[in-house]
Length: 487
Image (cartoon, rainbow, N blue to C red; front, side, top):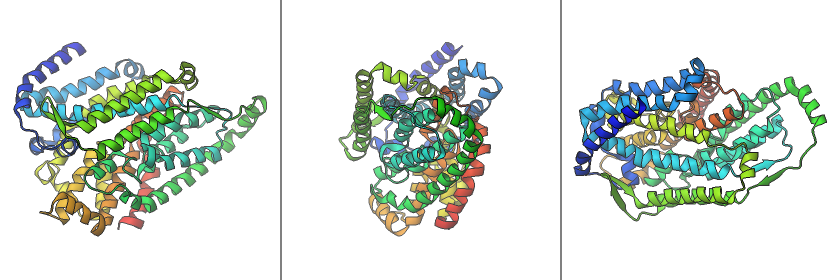
Protein backbone atom coordinates (compact mmCIF):
# COMPACT_ATOMS: atom_id res chain seq x y z
CA UNK A 1 0.00 0.00 0.00
CA UNK A 2 2.74 2.46 0.97
CA UNK A 3 4.68 1.70 -2.25
CA UNK A 4 1.57 2.19 -4.39
CA UNK A 5 0.81 5.55 -2.76
CA UNK A 6 4.41 6.68 -3.10
CA UNK A 7 4.59 5.70 -6.78
CA UNK A 8 1.33 7.59 -7.43
CA UNK A 9 2.62 10.66 -5.59
CA UNK A 10 5.97 10.66 -7.41
CA UNK A 11 4.19 10.22 -10.75
CA UNK A 12 1.97 13.24 -10.12
CA UNK A 13 4.93 15.27 -8.94
CA UNK A 14 6.86 14.43 -12.11
CA UNK A 15 3.88 15.44 -14.23
CA UNK A 16 3.83 18.78 -12.47
CA UNK A 17 7.58 19.46 -12.74
CA UNK A 18 7.48 20.98 -16.24
CA UNK A 19 5.12 23.64 -14.92
CA UNK A 20 7.42 24.21 -11.97
CA UNK A 21 10.50 24.57 -14.14
CA UNK A 22 8.79 27.20 -16.30
CA UNK A 23 7.51 29.27 -13.37
CA UNK A 24 9.47 32.38 -12.46
CA UNK A 25 10.59 32.09 -8.86
CA UNK A 26 10.80 35.27 -6.78
CA UNK A 27 13.17 35.85 -3.92
CA UNK A 28 16.80 35.07 -3.26
CA UNK A 29 17.38 31.83 -1.43
CA UNK A 30 16.91 32.40 2.30
CA UNK A 31 14.53 35.31 1.70
CA UNK A 32 12.62 33.17 -0.77
CA UNK A 33 12.38 30.55 1.94
CA UNK A 34 10.47 32.97 4.12
CA UNK A 35 8.38 35.06 1.78
CA UNK A 36 7.43 32.88 -1.17
CA UNK A 37 4.46 34.14 -3.18
CA UNK A 38 1.06 33.72 -1.52
CA UNK A 39 -1.05 32.84 -4.60
CA UNK A 40 -2.23 29.47 -3.29
CA UNK A 41 -2.71 30.94 0.16
CA UNK A 42 -5.40 33.20 -1.24
CA UNK A 43 -7.24 30.21 -2.74
CA UNK A 44 -6.78 27.50 -0.11
CA UNK A 45 -9.97 27.14 1.96
CA UNK A 46 -9.50 26.66 5.67
CA UNK A 47 -10.56 23.00 5.48
CA UNK A 48 -7.38 22.17 3.55
CA UNK A 49 -5.63 22.26 6.95
CA UNK A 50 -7.57 19.15 8.05
CA UNK A 51 -4.74 16.72 7.12
CA UNK A 52 -2.48 18.74 9.42
CA UNK A 53 -5.07 18.39 12.19
CA UNK A 54 -5.26 14.69 11.36
CA UNK A 55 -1.54 14.06 11.76
CA UNK A 56 -1.52 15.98 15.06
CA UNK A 57 -4.42 13.88 16.35
CA UNK A 58 -2.62 10.72 15.23
CA UNK A 59 0.49 11.73 17.17
CA UNK A 60 -1.72 12.50 20.18
CA UNK A 61 -4.04 9.47 20.14
CA UNK A 62 -2.32 6.43 18.59
CA UNK A 63 0.56 6.11 21.12
CA UNK A 64 -2.11 5.73 23.84
CA UNK A 65 -4.91 3.92 22.02
CA UNK A 66 -2.80 1.58 19.86
CA UNK A 67 0.83 1.66 21.03
CA UNK A 68 1.96 -1.49 19.19
CA UNK A 69 0.42 -0.33 15.93
CA UNK A 70 1.94 3.12 16.32
CA UNK A 71 5.42 1.80 17.13
CA UNK A 72 5.50 -0.33 13.99
CA UNK A 73 3.54 1.86 11.56
CA UNK A 74 4.00 5.54 12.46
CA UNK A 75 5.99 6.19 9.23
CA UNK A 76 3.04 4.89 7.20
CA UNK A 77 0.58 7.03 9.16
CA UNK A 78 2.74 10.10 8.53
CA UNK A 79 2.97 9.24 4.82
CA UNK A 80 -0.78 8.67 4.56
CA UNK A 81 -1.68 12.09 5.96
CA UNK A 82 0.94 13.70 3.71
CA UNK A 83 -0.58 12.06 0.64
CA UNK A 84 -4.14 12.95 1.67
CA UNK A 85 -3.11 16.56 1.20
CA UNK A 86 -0.51 16.23 -1.58
CA UNK A 87 -2.38 14.09 -4.12
CA UNK A 88 -5.53 16.27 -4.41
CA UNK A 89 -3.38 19.42 -4.32
CA UNK A 90 -1.24 18.17 -7.21
CA UNK A 91 -4.32 17.24 -9.22
CA UNK A 92 -6.04 20.58 -8.55
CA UNK A 93 -3.10 22.99 -8.72
CA UNK A 94 -0.40 21.00 -10.57
CA UNK A 95 2.69 23.21 -10.97
CA UNK A 96 1.83 25.60 -8.15
CA UNK A 97 1.29 22.74 -5.70
CA UNK A 98 4.46 20.98 -6.83
CA UNK A 99 6.35 24.24 -6.36
CA UNK A 100 5.07 24.61 -2.79
CA UNK A 101 5.94 21.00 -1.98
CA UNK A 102 9.45 21.23 -3.41
CA UNK A 103 9.87 24.62 -1.76
CA UNK A 104 9.09 23.43 1.75
CA UNK A 105 11.18 20.26 1.45
CA UNK A 106 14.24 21.80 -0.22
CA UNK A 107 14.35 24.98 1.85
CA UNK A 108 12.77 23.94 5.15
CA UNK A 109 12.53 20.21 5.83
CA UNK A 110 15.88 18.98 4.51
CA UNK A 111 17.94 21.72 6.25
CA UNK A 112 15.84 21.17 9.40
CA UNK A 113 16.67 17.45 9.50
CA UNK A 114 20.33 18.00 8.58
CA UNK A 115 20.73 20.46 11.46
CA UNK A 116 18.98 18.17 13.95
CA UNK A 117 21.03 15.18 12.76
CA UNK A 118 24.30 17.11 13.06
CA UNK A 119 23.58 18.37 16.58
CA UNK A 120 22.19 14.98 17.64
CA UNK A 121 25.28 13.17 16.33
CA UNK A 122 27.87 15.53 17.80
CA UNK A 123 26.18 15.90 21.20
CA UNK A 124 25.64 12.12 21.36
CA UNK A 125 29.41 11.64 21.48
CA UNK A 126 29.86 13.67 24.69
CA UNK A 127 29.53 11.49 27.77
CA UNK A 128 29.25 12.81 31.33
CA UNK A 129 30.45 10.07 33.69
CA UNK A 130 30.40 9.95 37.44
CA UNK A 131 27.98 10.07 40.33
CA UNK A 132 25.74 13.00 39.53
CA UNK A 133 22.86 12.74 41.99
CA UNK A 134 19.49 13.92 40.76
CA UNK A 135 18.86 16.21 43.72
CA UNK A 136 16.71 19.32 43.31
CA UNK A 137 19.74 21.60 43.51
CA UNK A 138 21.61 19.59 40.84
CA UNK A 139 18.61 19.35 38.52
CA UNK A 140 17.85 23.06 38.86
CA UNK A 141 21.50 23.86 38.16
CA UNK A 142 21.48 21.78 34.96
CA UNK A 143 18.26 23.49 33.80
CA UNK A 144 19.75 26.92 34.55
CA UNK A 145 22.94 26.02 32.67
CA UNK A 146 20.95 24.79 29.66
CA UNK A 147 18.80 27.93 29.70
CA UNK A 148 21.93 30.10 29.63
CA UNK A 149 23.58 28.05 26.86
CA UNK A 150 20.54 27.88 24.57
CA UNK A 151 20.89 31.40 23.18
CA UNK A 152 24.50 30.72 22.13
CA UNK A 153 24.48 27.13 20.88
CA UNK A 154 20.79 27.05 19.94
CA UNK A 155 17.91 25.40 21.76
CA UNK A 156 18.55 22.17 19.84
CA UNK A 157 22.28 22.21 20.63
CA UNK A 158 21.76 22.86 24.34
CA UNK A 159 18.98 20.26 24.55
CA UNK A 160 21.01 17.54 22.82
CA UNK A 161 24.04 18.35 24.96
CA UNK A 162 22.31 18.14 28.35
CA UNK A 163 19.31 15.81 28.05
CA UNK A 164 21.32 12.63 28.55
CA UNK A 165 23.30 13.91 31.58
CA UNK A 166 20.11 15.00 33.35
CA UNK A 167 18.40 11.68 32.55
CA UNK A 168 21.43 9.78 33.86
CA UNK A 169 21.51 11.89 37.03
CA UNK A 170 17.87 10.97 37.72
CA UNK A 171 18.03 7.32 36.69
CA UNK A 172 17.16 6.14 40.23
CA UNK A 173 14.39 8.66 40.72
CA UNK A 174 10.85 7.32 40.51
CA UNK A 175 9.28 10.67 39.53
CA UNK A 176 11.16 12.33 36.68
CA UNK A 177 8.58 13.26 34.04
CA UNK A 178 8.50 16.78 35.48
CA UNK A 179 12.27 17.04 35.01
CA UNK A 180 11.97 16.42 31.26
CA UNK A 181 8.92 18.68 30.93
CA UNK A 182 10.66 21.65 32.56
CA UNK A 183 13.75 20.83 30.49
CA UNK A 184 11.59 21.29 27.37
CA UNK A 185 10.13 24.52 28.76
CA UNK A 186 13.47 26.13 29.57
CA UNK A 187 16.33 24.57 27.62
CA UNK A 188 14.48 23.64 24.43
CA UNK A 189 12.55 26.92 24.14
CA UNK A 190 12.66 29.92 26.49
CA UNK A 191 16.44 29.90 26.88
CA UNK A 192 16.92 30.54 23.17
CA UNK A 193 15.48 34.05 23.12
CA UNK A 194 18.53 36.28 23.39
CA UNK A 195 20.39 35.87 20.07
CA UNK A 196 19.57 34.82 16.49
CA UNK A 197 21.54 31.62 17.15
CA UNK A 198 19.03 30.64 19.82
CA UNK A 199 15.89 29.92 17.81
CA UNK A 200 14.88 29.92 14.10
CA UNK A 201 12.41 32.88 14.26
CA UNK A 202 15.10 35.17 15.65
CA UNK A 203 17.55 33.98 13.02
CA UNK A 204 14.95 34.79 10.36
CA UNK A 205 14.61 38.29 11.84
CA UNK A 206 18.40 38.63 11.67
CA UNK A 207 18.30 37.72 7.97
CA UNK A 208 15.79 40.52 7.43
CA UNK A 209 17.80 43.23 9.14
CA UNK A 210 17.23 42.89 12.89
CA UNK A 211 20.60 43.55 14.56
CA UNK A 212 22.35 40.51 16.03
CA UNK A 213 22.37 41.83 19.60
CA UNK A 214 19.00 43.62 19.41
CA UNK A 215 17.25 40.51 20.75
CA UNK A 216 19.16 40.99 24.02
CA UNK A 217 16.29 43.40 24.71
CA UNK A 218 14.32 40.26 25.57
CA UNK A 219 16.55 39.69 28.61
CA UNK A 220 14.08 41.19 31.15
CA UNK A 221 11.09 39.12 29.99
CA UNK A 222 13.18 36.01 29.42
CA UNK A 223 14.84 36.34 32.85
CA UNK A 224 11.53 36.77 34.66
CA UNK A 225 9.99 33.80 32.85
CA UNK A 226 13.02 31.59 33.43
CA UNK A 227 13.39 32.51 37.12
CA UNK A 228 9.71 31.80 37.81
CA UNK A 229 9.91 28.41 36.09
CA UNK A 230 13.21 27.50 37.78
CA UNK A 231 11.76 28.40 41.20
CA UNK A 232 8.60 26.43 40.47
CA UNK A 233 10.66 23.48 39.26
CA UNK A 234 12.80 23.53 42.39
CA UNK A 235 9.67 23.47 44.55
CA UNK A 236 8.06 20.62 42.58
CA UNK A 237 11.29 18.61 42.40
CA UNK A 238 11.94 19.11 46.13
CA UNK A 239 8.45 17.81 46.92
CA UNK A 240 8.96 14.69 44.83
CA UNK A 241 12.49 14.22 46.18
CA UNK A 242 11.30 14.27 49.80
CA UNK A 243 8.85 11.49 48.96
CA UNK A 244 11.68 9.41 47.43
CA UNK A 245 14.52 10.39 49.80
CA UNK A 246 14.68 7.17 51.87
CA UNK A 247 15.16 5.14 48.67
CA UNK A 248 17.70 7.63 47.38
CA UNK A 249 19.65 7.49 50.66
CA UNK A 250 19.70 3.66 50.59
CA UNK A 251 21.07 3.71 47.05
CA UNK A 252 23.67 6.29 47.95
CA UNK A 253 24.88 4.21 50.85
CA UNK A 254 25.46 1.08 48.80
CA UNK A 255 26.78 2.51 45.56
CA UNK A 256 30.38 3.51 45.02
CA UNK A 257 30.73 7.13 44.07
CA UNK A 258 32.45 7.72 40.75
CA UNK A 259 34.30 11.01 40.16
CA UNK A 260 32.69 13.34 37.67
CA UNK A 261 34.35 13.34 34.25
CA UNK A 262 33.51 14.23 30.67
CA UNK A 263 34.62 12.15 27.67
CA UNK A 264 34.34 12.91 23.98
CA UNK A 265 34.96 16.63 24.52
CA UNK A 266 36.41 16.96 21.02
CA UNK A 267 32.77 16.84 19.85
CA UNK A 268 32.40 20.37 21.20
CA UNK A 269 34.52 21.47 18.23
CA UNK A 270 31.95 19.92 15.91
CA UNK A 271 29.09 21.63 17.75
CA UNK A 272 30.90 24.97 17.41
CA UNK A 273 31.49 24.20 13.72
CA UNK A 274 27.77 23.59 13.23
CA UNK A 275 26.77 26.85 14.92
CA UNK A 276 29.43 28.74 12.94
CA UNK A 277 27.98 27.28 9.72
CA UNK A 278 24.49 28.48 10.73
CA UNK A 279 25.80 31.97 11.47
CA UNK A 280 27.79 32.02 8.22
CA UNK A 281 24.65 31.25 6.22
CA UNK A 282 23.05 34.42 7.58
CA UNK A 283 25.98 36.72 6.80
CA UNK A 284 27.55 35.40 3.59
CA UNK A 285 25.53 36.08 0.40
CA UNK A 286 27.25 34.55 -2.65
CA UNK A 287 24.05 34.08 -4.66
CA UNK A 288 21.59 31.33 -5.56
CA UNK A 289 21.31 28.29 -7.78
CA UNK A 290 18.12 26.82 -9.20
CA UNK A 291 17.04 23.31 -8.20
CA UNK A 292 13.81 22.14 -9.86
CA UNK A 293 12.64 25.73 -10.14
CA UNK A 294 13.49 26.63 -6.53
CA UNK A 295 16.12 29.25 -5.78
CA UNK A 296 18.46 27.76 -3.17
CA UNK A 297 21.16 29.94 -1.63
CA UNK A 298 24.74 28.79 -2.10
CA UNK A 299 25.26 29.76 1.53
CA UNK A 300 22.49 27.35 2.55
CA UNK A 301 24.01 24.46 0.60
CA UNK A 302 27.41 25.29 2.08
CA UNK A 303 25.92 25.37 5.59
CA UNK A 304 24.27 21.98 5.12
CA UNK A 305 27.48 20.52 3.69
CA UNK A 306 29.50 21.75 6.68
CA UNK A 307 26.93 20.34 9.12
CA UNK A 308 27.04 16.95 7.39
CA UNK A 309 30.84 17.04 7.50
CA UNK A 310 30.80 17.86 11.22
CA UNK A 311 28.44 14.95 11.85
CA UNK A 312 30.57 12.52 9.85
CA UNK A 313 33.73 13.66 11.66
CA UNK A 314 31.96 13.11 14.98
CA UNK A 315 30.99 9.59 13.95
CA UNK A 316 34.49 8.74 12.72
CA UNK A 317 36.45 10.23 15.63
CA UNK A 318 34.24 9.16 18.54
CA UNK A 319 34.76 5.70 20.01
CA UNK A 320 31.79 3.38 19.73
CA UNK A 321 32.06 2.65 23.45
CA UNK A 322 31.34 6.31 24.26
CA UNK A 323 28.10 6.30 22.30
CA UNK A 324 27.15 3.00 23.93
CA UNK A 325 27.83 4.52 27.36
CA UNK A 326 25.50 7.36 26.37
CA UNK A 327 22.72 4.94 25.42
CA UNK A 328 22.95 6.44 21.94
CA UNK A 329 20.73 5.12 19.13
CA UNK A 330 19.38 6.53 15.88
CA UNK A 331 15.71 5.89 16.71
CA UNK A 332 14.93 9.38 18.11
CA UNK A 333 16.20 11.17 14.99
CA UNK A 334 14.51 8.56 12.79
CA UNK A 335 11.17 9.16 14.52
CA UNK A 336 11.49 12.92 14.18
CA UNK A 337 12.45 12.60 10.49
CA UNK A 338 9.45 10.42 9.60
CA UNK A 339 6.85 12.37 11.58
CA UNK A 340 8.05 15.80 10.55
CA UNK A 341 8.15 14.74 6.91
CA UNK A 342 4.37 14.39 7.20
CA UNK A 343 3.98 17.50 9.31
CA UNK A 344 5.90 19.68 6.84
CA UNK A 345 3.72 18.43 3.96
CA UNK A 346 0.40 18.93 5.71
CA UNK A 347 1.42 22.31 7.12
CA UNK A 348 1.70 23.82 3.60
CA UNK A 349 -1.89 25.17 3.38
CA UNK A 350 -1.80 26.59 6.92
CA UNK A 351 1.42 28.50 6.23
CA UNK A 352 0.22 29.62 2.79
CA UNK A 353 -3.02 30.97 4.29
CA UNK A 354 -1.02 32.88 6.90
CA UNK A 355 1.32 34.30 4.26
CA UNK A 356 -1.70 35.50 2.24
CA UNK A 357 -2.47 37.82 5.16
CA UNK A 358 -5.69 39.78 4.73
CA UNK A 359 -6.31 38.05 1.38
CA UNK A 360 -6.50 34.57 2.91
CA UNK A 361 -8.96 32.56 4.98
CA UNK A 362 -7.55 33.99 8.21
CA UNK A 363 -7.97 37.60 7.10
CA UNK A 364 -10.07 38.45 10.16
CA UNK A 365 -7.37 37.21 12.53
CA UNK A 366 -4.57 39.04 10.73
CA UNK A 367 -6.52 42.30 10.61
CA UNK A 368 -7.39 42.12 14.32
CA UNK A 369 -3.76 41.95 15.50
CA UNK A 370 -2.72 45.51 16.30
CA UNK A 371 -1.38 45.78 19.88
CA UNK A 372 1.82 44.28 21.38
CA UNK A 373 -0.11 41.86 23.62
CA UNK A 374 -2.07 40.66 20.59
CA UNK A 375 1.14 40.01 18.65
CA UNK A 376 2.51 38.09 21.65
CA UNK A 377 -0.52 35.79 21.99
CA UNK A 378 -1.46 35.29 18.34
CA UNK A 379 2.10 34.66 17.20
CA UNK A 380 2.71 32.45 20.23
CA UNK A 381 -0.55 30.53 19.88
CA UNK A 382 0.08 29.77 16.21
CA UNK A 383 3.76 28.97 16.89
CA UNK A 384 2.64 26.31 19.38
CA UNK A 385 1.31 24.22 16.50
CA UNK A 386 2.81 25.64 13.30
CA UNK A 387 6.39 26.26 12.25
CA UNK A 388 7.30 29.28 14.36
CA UNK A 389 9.74 30.75 11.82
CA UNK A 390 7.23 31.56 9.02
CA UNK A 391 4.62 32.49 11.66
CA UNK A 392 7.10 35.05 13.03
CA UNK A 393 7.81 36.36 9.54
CA UNK A 394 4.12 36.72 8.70
CA UNK A 395 3.49 39.04 11.64
CA UNK A 396 6.88 40.70 11.21
CA UNK A 397 5.73 41.78 7.74
CA UNK A 398 2.34 42.73 9.21
CA UNK A 399 4.14 45.16 11.54
CA UNK A 400 6.19 46.64 8.69
CA UNK A 401 3.01 47.19 6.68
CA UNK A 402 1.12 48.55 9.68
CA UNK A 403 3.72 51.14 10.71
CA UNK A 404 5.92 51.83 7.67
CA UNK A 405 4.02 51.24 4.43
CA UNK A 406 5.99 52.19 1.34
CA UNK A 407 9.42 52.20 3.01
CA UNK A 408 12.17 49.81 1.94
CA UNK A 409 12.60 46.81 4.21
CA UNK A 410 15.99 48.02 5.47
CA UNK A 411 14.60 51.43 6.49
CA UNK A 412 11.40 49.97 7.94
CA UNK A 413 13.19 47.36 10.05
CA UNK A 414 15.66 49.95 11.34
CA UNK A 415 12.80 52.20 12.47
CA UNK A 416 10.80 49.26 13.85
CA UNK A 417 13.67 48.30 16.18
CA UNK A 418 13.93 51.86 17.54
CA UNK A 419 10.43 53.31 17.39
CA UNK A 420 8.19 50.26 17.91
CA UNK A 421 10.48 48.20 20.12
CA UNK A 422 7.73 46.67 22.22
CA UNK A 423 5.85 45.40 19.17
CA UNK A 424 8.88 43.54 17.86
CA UNK A 425 9.72 42.26 21.35
CA UNK A 426 6.19 40.90 21.77
CA UNK A 427 6.39 39.19 18.39
CA UNK A 428 9.80 37.67 19.15
CA UNK A 429 8.86 36.52 22.65
CA UNK A 430 5.62 34.93 21.47
CA UNK A 431 7.34 32.95 18.72
CA UNK A 432 10.10 31.66 21.02
CA UNK A 433 8.43 31.29 24.43
CA UNK A 434 5.26 29.57 23.27
CA UNK A 435 7.10 26.96 21.26
CA UNK A 436 7.11 25.20 24.64
CA UNK A 437 3.33 24.78 24.62
CA UNK A 438 3.32 21.53 22.60
CA UNK A 439 5.70 18.79 21.55
CA UNK A 440 5.76 20.13 17.98
CA UNK A 441 6.12 23.80 18.91
CA UNK A 442 9.90 23.75 18.43
CA UNK A 443 12.31 21.33 16.80
CA UNK A 444 14.02 19.89 19.92
CA UNK A 445 10.81 19.27 21.91
CA UNK A 446 9.87 16.07 20.14
CA UNK A 447 13.46 14.82 20.10
CA UNK A 448 13.84 15.37 23.85
CA UNK A 449 10.61 13.43 24.34
CA UNK A 450 11.88 10.58 22.14
CA UNK A 451 15.23 10.38 23.95
CA UNK A 452 13.52 10.42 27.34
CA UNK A 453 11.12 7.63 26.30
CA UNK A 454 14.02 5.57 24.99
CA UNK A 455 15.61 5.99 28.45
CA UNK A 456 12.46 4.59 30.08
CA UNK A 457 10.68 7.81 31.09
CA UNK A 458 6.90 7.49 30.64
CA UNK A 459 6.36 10.84 28.97
CA UNK A 460 2.83 12.24 28.75
CA UNK A 461 0.90 12.06 25.48
CA UNK A 462 0.52 15.07 23.20
CA UNK A 463 -2.67 16.17 24.97
CA UNK A 464 -1.36 15.03 28.35
CA UNK A 465 1.61 17.37 27.98
CA UNK A 466 -0.67 20.19 26.85
CA UNK A 467 -3.43 19.79 29.46
CA UNK A 468 -1.43 18.64 32.50
CA UNK A 469 1.71 20.69 32.08
CA UNK A 470 1.95 23.53 29.56
CA UNK A 471 -1.53 25.05 29.95
CA UNK A 472 -1.65 25.11 33.78
CA UNK A 473 2.02 26.12 34.19
CA UNK A 474 3.05 28.18 31.18
CA UNK A 475 -0.15 30.07 30.42
CA UNK A 476 -0.31 31.81 33.86
CA UNK A 477 3.37 32.75 33.49
CA UNK A 478 2.73 34.12 30.00
CA UNK A 479 -0.24 36.12 31.30
CA UNK A 480 2.08 37.67 33.90
CA UNK A 481 4.65 38.41 31.15
CA UNK A 482 1.88 40.13 29.18
CA UNK A 483 0.83 42.29 32.15
CA UNK A 484 4.40 43.32 32.97
CA UNK A 485 5.86 43.83 29.49
CA UNK A 486 3.29 43.98 26.69
CA UNK A 487 0.25 45.97 27.86
